[in-house]
Length: 458
Ligand code: ARG
Image 1 (tube, protein in one colour):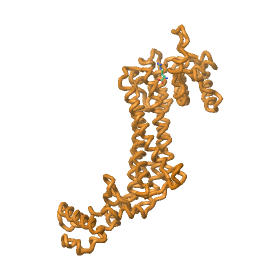
Image 2 (cartoon, helix red, strand yellow):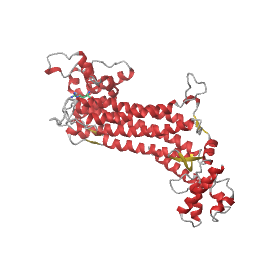
Image 3 (tube, protein in one colour):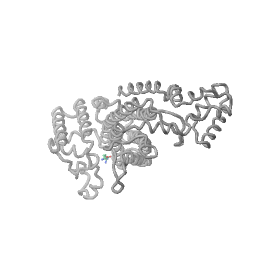
Image 4 (cartoon, helix red, strand yellow):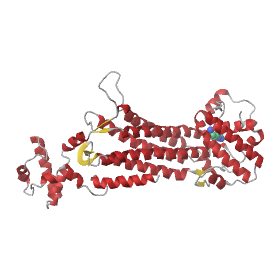
C-alpha cells in the first residue's frame, strides 16, 4: 500500500518502485523502527495530539507486528518502499484509524535518521563486547608468554629483543583505543533527530526531549535541517570500524608471516586453517588472509559514505538512502571478522624455541653492547661505531656477539671486560628494558593488569 499517493494520478511504474525501494536492505531496522514509533506515539498521546484509545491501538498493533516479524509469521512485502512504510501500512491494515495517526508530526526524513542512529548504537554495543573478548584472549596469551623472547622488528629486520607478550599487548592497546573510539562516536551519534520533521519541524506541540529520554538517548538535535541531513555519525562510525579492520589486517599480516616456514613462530589450529586441493603439504592461513582482504571493503565503505555526502545540499536527498548498505556492510564485516579472529588466536600454538632461535641471530643485542660501553663512560656515538665494527667482524667470521672471544672484544677497546657477556645476554637485554611501556616481564604484567582492569569496566 503506497501511503503517499494523494497527489499522484498513476500507479508507480513497477521497475521504478523496485529501484526506489530500500526494503531489501533496511528491513533489518524493523526493531528500531518500531521502538522509535512507540516512543513517538507515547509523546503524541502525552501531548494530547492523539487520543489515548489510538495510542493503545498503536502500541498493541506495533507490538504484534514486532512479535510476528520475529516469529517469521509476518513477511516483509517486497512491494513496500522501505521498512518505515511497511510497518506503518501493516499497522494501518490492522487499525485503520489509529494507524493513520501514527505519522502525525513526523516525516520519514527524521524517522529514518532516528532509526539508523538507534541501529548503529545497538551495533556499537555488540562490537564493543567482541573487542573485549579479543582483548581478553590477547591478555591471556600474553600472560603465558611474558618471557617468550622474540626479535622485535623495524623495517622487518631484526632490531631489539622483545617478548611475544609485548607484541600481543601492542595489539591489545590498539583494540582498547578502538573501544574508546566507538564510545566517542556513540556520544555524538546517540542523539535524537525526531521532531525535525521533513526539514523544518512541525506546528504540533511536540515534546522532543521526552522522546529522546524515552529511547534512552543522550540528547536531541537542535537544528532540524541538521537533524535530517546529518550523516556524520555514519561516516565516523564507519571510519572507527575501518580502523578496527586496519588493526585486524596488520595483525593478520603478522599471523600469516609467523605461520610461514620462514618464521614458524606459531601454528594455527587445524580447525582454523585450510588445505590445498593439489598440494598435500599445505596448511593455509585463510582466515587471516580473508580478514586482511575484507579490511579493503570496510575502508571502501567509508569512502562511499564520504563521497555520497560531499555534494548534497541541505536537507534530505534520496542519495542518502545509500548510507545504509555501506554502513551495514562495515558493521557486518567487523562482526564477522572479530569473533573468528579471536577464536583463531585463542587456539594458536606458540613455538617459543623458534622465536628464541630467531632472537639469538641477527645481532639484536647490538644496542645493548653499545650501551654497555656507554655506561662505562664511552660517548654513545663511539660505542655505536665500535659495536658496528664488532658486528661486521662477527659476520665475516661466522660468530655472534655471545660467542666472540674476549680478546677480540678487547682488541677494539679495553673497556670491555668479562661482564660483557652478561650484559648482552637476551635475558638481561629484556629484563633491563624496565621503563614503563617496555617489554620486561614485570612491566608487562603491570600493563596486562591495567588493560584487564580497563576492559572490565566496559
Ligand atoms: N528509505 C528512505 C531512506 O532510506 C527513507 C526516507 C525517505 N524520505 C523521502 N522523503 N523519500 O533514506
